[in-house]
Amino acid sequence: MASTRLTKPQLAAVMAGNGLEFYDFLIFGFFAVQIGAVFFPSQDSTTSLLQTLLVFGVGFLTRPLGGMVIGPLGDRIGRKPAMLFCFGLMGFSILGMVLTPSFENIGWAAPVLVVIFRLLQGFALGGEVGPATAFLMEAAPTEKRGLYVSLQFATQQAAILAAGLVGVVLSSLLSPQDLNQWGWRVAMLLGVAVVPFAIVMRRTLPETLELRPDAPRQKLSRAHLWLALVTIAMMASATIATFTMNYMNIFATHTLGLSSSIAFGAVVVAGACGTIFNPIGGMLSDRIGRKPVMLTAAGLLCVVGIPCFLLMSELRTPLALYAGTALMAICLAFSLPSIMCSLSESLPQEMRSGGIGIIYAVAISIFGGTAQFVVAWLTAASGSPLAPAWYMSAALVVGLCGMLLTRETAPVKLR
Image (cartoon, rainbow, N blue to C red; front, side):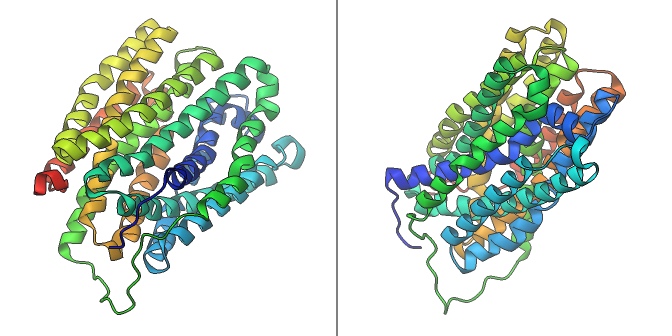
């Protein structure tokens, strides 16, 4: 493997690009209520919300395709060109969504265009994760792989934090009518505005893939298929937990009856906890191993999920909402870097970008794309505000089984 060390500006370029892509993808879900009013008008607010969350989920349909196309491309032509392509495509698709007129102005063409741009977003983000994660691991010193890979998740959470802050500011300054009509477009446009600068920053990155034309091509083995199965189980549980957390602002407004500004505050809390504790989880996994960290954190989240949702639904106060969100977000933040780093270390360099991209995209497309819709449907069908917690806890039990079956990969444990 090529020995590559990143300067701080170069590392910041990777982090900024990753964060911007996730901001642009996730902002749609945070403004689902407002977007639903523009593109899916209905007399029933629940129907409008479910239609919008279905379109949010559509973006996950093309994530496996992006992982399957761009991930292996990162193994053939390099991590850097693959990341640049994904980032440019994401900028184009989010700009298209910002400029799409409402249902009132162009009828059914509006939701059709939104679906098309959402599919492009999914393709771009599905392709980004493999090369970006491989890049971070290959550029990291051996004893800091967990920390470097954790930056992938820390920047995702920073994107959630930024989206939450934007939501708080806009919902505080604008009337509900203005927020529905054009406020959400401003939130998306903020992400578009930074795209040209981030592309310039990414062009300065070195290449971490050591291209060897004479190297034999790696073939899929039974061990690789077993790794994929076990990792998908872990990724599925983490994905459902992540998007249950991303649902907190909708849960706060639609289920608890709290204001939009308070609801977006929960997004800020979750994003802040993830931004802070993801790197701590990564560093901890470098010191004591991947399995102890992921098992402990996921186990705690499984235990505290239902009590947290019970507390929030009984008290229905901002303090209860923020405390419950913070506790669950911290547990989740500790587990994610260990899962991804374990997968990265288990794959040979020639298959790393494609393997990560495909496994991650398949897990997140099936379980992430449906999570918020399933949670909203279960809540409506059961009438119980605890439905999100039950769904998340069941997924975590499956993930814990996968964690028990995976092998330890941390260098500190292998020495």
